[in-house]
Image (cartoon, rainbow, N blue to C red):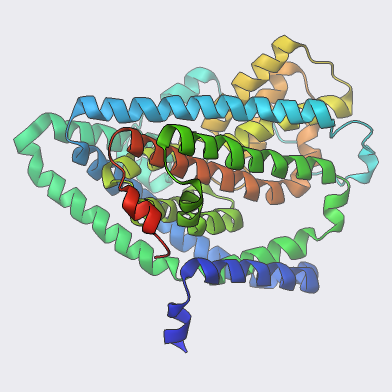
Length: 412
């Protein structure tokens, strides 16, 4: 029986678990929450890997690049792609909100509102200072990913600057990265069970009725994300990366399934790294650097949604917005997406930043909170797909991509 189970490719087991979980949740209803602990166990198991995996992989990846100038080329290309795709995504959300007007004529009394969150008092200066870790050990204990990335990058750069004296450390971090990848392979076998439980809980808790009042917003959220994945990422891969698009998506199907069920970029990070290195042919140095960085700052699905949700709130409360405010929303949506943590519901937190700047009432957040999880799942899938797409594109541009491995990858 076990032999038969492991003969089935992992992605097929995950997709089957996802479908069965939805069916069970719709049949069982809210009581499906009784098995949510299985999904929580899976998420905790995979989150356990995030901090050591980022630290070892990023330091090892930077050291493997071997040249500070090459590191600048890789990082520069990645950042340009992150910013451009983020801006396109934000404007796409504004376009969809303007054309389809999801908040116009909405019967507000038909929506069960949640609590209106307290505005985020964090200033831009505070955000900048927060990326510098006062204590690397404390940052690791708190699982604060962005300052951890900064520290790991500095360690990797220090190793490159040390040249011969830094080589003993390279072996240690290389070994650590390999060990963490092996542990990831073990934890990944829990994926079908975690996905099954999480999807049953989501389907059972939300059901079909909860989506009716906000159906247009949910639909536009999914449409926007699919357009980002199907057009923006595909065009980037085909015309800049010059790689086969179908083979790319086949190679990241495990990461897509995990990201959709967990709604967490950070929780999916080990899976995305594994797919990029083993299925997509991206070198260890580029994948470790770009994907670890992207999991924190490349949130195109969130940027699109922040733009869409701002117009949704403006239409509900009758707030007129100028073209100048549209531009401000696009910029703040991109910055807010960068500042959003890679955890479920992070987009709700960043809404206060965007809404407050253009005069949209924060009560809008309470309207969407009830169905945010179902939308967050698709946004996270978009974010994770974008991390992998940028990694493949940058690897292709810098000669760090094994295209034969990308084309031949079936499942691992």
